[in-house]
View 1 (cartoon, rainbow, N blue to C red):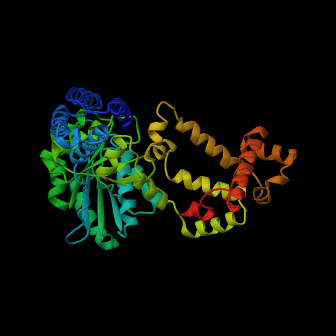
View 2 (cartoon, helix red, strand yellow; view 1 turned 180 degrees about the vertical axis):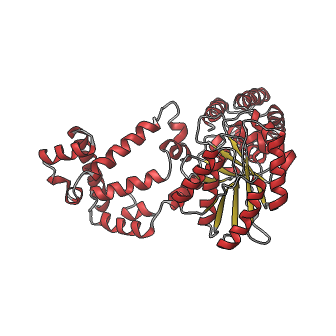
Length: 443
C-alpha cells in the first residue's frame, strides 16, 4: 500500500546520509521533500502540516546536531512521529454482558461483508463463538455472500427473509445468539454509494436497539483524500469506536491510514491484507511506520509464520532432513506453508533491508502464483512412489506426468533439477559445511 511513499522517503534519506554534518538547509530540504511525499500519498494537508512541524522542532535540536550519524537521527524522529500520528493501537472492547454486538459500517465496495467473515474467524481463533448477521437487505447478493462465507469457515449466519427492517433483524439476532450460545454478534449493515441521511438514520436506529460495544468503520485504503470526510461523516452520526482498513495490499498511496486516525481521533484496529478470509492483521503503529520507512516488519512476518506453523509437522521434517531424506512430498508441504504466509512481495517488504534491496525489481505476483501452482500440479500428477523417489521418472513417466499436469517435460526436468540442488544443500548442512546445522532451520 505504501510502496510509492516508501520509495520517496528512502530517496530522501539516502541523499541525507551522504552528508557528514546535518545543516539547517538540509533539514529544510528534507522537510520539503517529506511534505511533498505525504501530500502525493493522499495524506490530509492539515495532518501533513502538523507532522512536519513536529519533525522540524525535534530535528533542529542539539541532540541531532551532535549525533555521530545525523541522518539516522532524523529517520528515527520521522519514525517516532509517524507512530504518534498513526496513534495507539485499538483493541476490541468485549466487556459487559454477552452477547457483544459489533456493528460494521461503511460505503458499498469497501469490503464490509468479507470483513464480517474475517473478523468472525479472528474472534473464533481467540476462543469466542461468533454469529454473523445479514442485515444488508438492500443488496440481495450481500446475504448470499455472507451465507457462502459462513459455510466456508463453518460459522453460523442469521438471515431473515420476511422483509422486516434491518434494525428489527439486528435486534432479534441477539435472541438468536443467546439461543445458540454465541457470545459475539457481528452485524453486516447496509452500505450506500455515498453517505446519505436515510442510511445514517437506519444505523442510528440499529445502534439504539442493540447497544453495540463496537462500531467499526470499514474503509477502503484506496479511497484517498475522500476517506477523511467519509470517516468524519460516520463518526458524527454513530460515534465510531474503531477503523478497519481494507485493501492495504493494493496499489493505494496509503494516505487514508494516516489521515483518518489523525483527523477523527478514532483508533485503527485492524488491517485487511488480502482477499482470503484469514487475511486480517491487528493494527500495530510501530510496525506500519517501519514498513512505510522501508525498515521491514519482522514481528508481523514471524506471526504469519507461526500461524501457518505445525509443530508436529516441523518435528517430522527436522528428523527427515537430518537423515538427508527430502522428497517431493516434503517439497510440496513446505511450498504450501510458504503460500499461507501471503504474497512474496509482502514477505520481502517485511524483511529489513530486503524491500530496499529489491527496489526497482518488479515481482509479478500473478506469474509467481502461477509458477507455484504449476509446481503443485506436477507433483500431484506423480504417483506416491515417484514423489518419494523422483529418480525412477523415466521418459515415459515424465510424459504421463506432463499430460496429467498440463505442463511440459522440460518443466518437469527443471523441478527435478531444483529438487536435487536442495538435496545437495541439505547434505552439506548435515556434513557441517554450512553454518548452523539442520536444527538452525527450525529455530
